[in-house]
Image 1 (cartoon, rainbow, N blue to C red):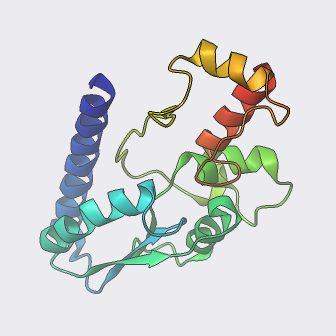
Image 2 (cartoon, rainbow, N blue to C red; image 1 turned 180 degrees about the horizontal axis):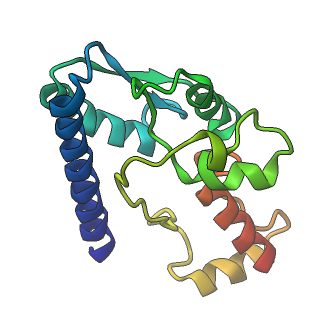
Length: 180
């Protein structure tokens, strides 16, 4: 419950800062004067999509311009992040960035086509998304220790699902698998 509360609090703070910054920009420069695009570098239905949908309508209202969602999934978020890095730096194309395309990809790929440190600038922290280890209710184990014991007795080892290669869930699952 504390993780959910902290994620909600972080989202509220991030949204508040984003809205405040947006209102300040509107007053200072007549920005924006056309639609803003939020690039989600993962498929619809994931964490980035949930966050983008939660803020897009509120930003549309606060800014007086449409805020549209543009899904550019692929290469563990690198395709969407690259498109934002290459966009005109005018504030009209924003990335709903996640850990994979900002931090992890640079260690997994030699050439991303963008440098998160050089090509992207953080604007606001929107949310914290905790990882969860979940098993079916009918599983013969209910603790991590029991899960590890079961994986050691299986010829296949530990099998798990994640939201994609290079994601925090994928790396956490691989780490658990190696240590098991």
